[in-house]
Each structure stands twice: as structure tokens, then as C-alpha cells.
Length: 359
Image (cartoon, rainbow, N blue to C red):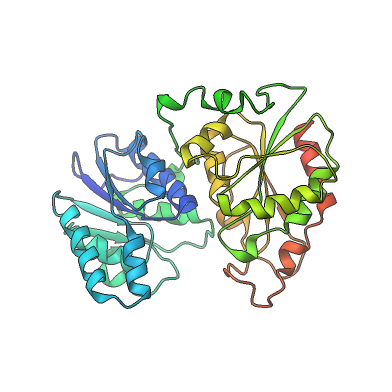
């Protein structure tokens, strides 16, 4: 750690509004900050639904929740009256407190505006792709060649004397005590057993928020169909994922499985993750929930790359598409083929699952 450039008891605002994976990535920044400068006071400005993941975080002294979804919808429809009103509400929320330093680790024009509204005399931004954020900052963190998002987020601490050599990887998601024993109760009447070496529990998340990050549901089914019957297969997801889960199950040729899509909240899902053996997923929020609660994962990658977004802690394994067109980081495939995800063969995934479940 370099010479500390923080006043005693510094009041620090962190602005990272969304999304689930990125908010969890950002918990690594705050954890390292509090680990190295325990007397600082951290306030975090966040939006639902990701806010629920921070409510019990021991590194956060104050959580401010502002719902950006109302702002986004109004901006999309050019509803300037609602845009102004939501920004006024954000300003009123922030103006209740005084901050010495504000860290914008989202890098949007919107997050820049909110950081400026904090009235913090020092406002530190990070180098990201988004234009205009720097206009609201008093200083910018150093740019680095490192691609991984968490390490790039960590640069926000460099002006405070915390360098890359100080970084310890790991995400933070602490569940309230009320979730102790939740998984056992949830599965009590579903013929699913926990912590049984003879019947490992494989969770499967079939969908992501980007269309081109999705592996075909039929491929999931073919990969799972050849697993031994003693492996318990449970599909997770949102209610809208059920149709894709059913497609996967149709390809499993009668192989037993269970879907709990839409039956849990984010924290309930995290509680189930904590008691399971392995998660199969794409690059999406549940991957990072799993990392935060200690569940090993096998994740499938095409338009994004584990070297940019993947877990940095042990116990996480990746299958990167062999297609030459990968890591474009586009939300929709410019070729309209999703060739990168389609190039991952079900047999490759089956082999990897068997190796991890029977290592």
C-alpha cells in the first residue's frame, strides 16, 4: 500500500447502481477499501433489484437506494418531467449527507451526474468506454492495460494510495441469519437431498440478460441427458425462463430433473447456492452470486470473456467458445447467428461436468 491519501474517518460515497453481476464485482473494491482503511465510512448509492444484495454487507456503513428504472423508462420515452423529478429525488437523497470523496465505479453519464450531485469535493472516475462521465469528475483514476472489470474498478482506489499490489480477490454477499436452513426447508418436499456425496446437486441456469450470451436450451438438455442418474439436476431462473427449461428437459429423454424457476427471490436463491455442489451457467448474475457464496461453477463463454468478467477466486471453471468470433462484448450478435455460443458442443460440457462432479 502506498502512502495513504485519506483523512481520518473519511466519508466515502460509492456510486454503482446496477447490474447484479457488476454490483457484486464492485463489492470487491469496497471490501479491499475497508480492509485497508477500516476507519473510513462507506455509503453506497445503488438501485433495485441489485440493492437487496448489499443490504447485509458488513463493509457498507450506509446504503442509499435510488430506483434508476423510473429514470431509464422516462428517458427512453423522452418524458423530461419525470427525468427531472427522479433526478431531484436522487439529489435530495444525497444532500442529506456530507461526503469527502465520491468514487464512481460505473462510469456512465448518469452515474457521473449522481456523483456530482453528492457535492463531494473529490470525485474520482474510472476509465471505461462510456462518453461524458469525466465531465463530472475532479480526477480520473489511472488507465491500465488489465482487462478484467474488477481490477479496472479497483483503479478508483489508486488516488487514495491503494494500488493493484494491495488487491485481494473475492466478492461479498452476506445472507441474513434468517436464511440459515432455508435450502433444507425449500427442498424438504421435493425429493432433493443436500450434502450427499452419492447424490451431488447440480444447479443449471439456462438464460442470461444478453440474447447472444445464451446457449441453446436444447444443448443444455443434450449435455445433461448423459449424466448419471444419481446426479440431481435442478433448473433455476426467472419465471420467463420456464419455457426454455422445458425445451431443455424435452431433450433429456425422460432424465429426471426439477425446475424451481420463479420460485425464489435473489437471496433465497443465494441460500440454495450456498448448499449445492455445482452451478452450470452462462455469463450472468447467478454466476457471481455463486462465487460470492462459495459455490463452484462451470460457465460457458462466447461474446464475453472470463478474462474480462469471470470469477477471480478458486473453484470456477470456464468453457470458452472455440469459434474465432468471440469476446465481441456486444449485447446482440452482429452476424445474427450466435455462432460463438452455438460452437460449444454438448459433449464438451458433459465431459467437463463429469470431471468436476467426480473429481
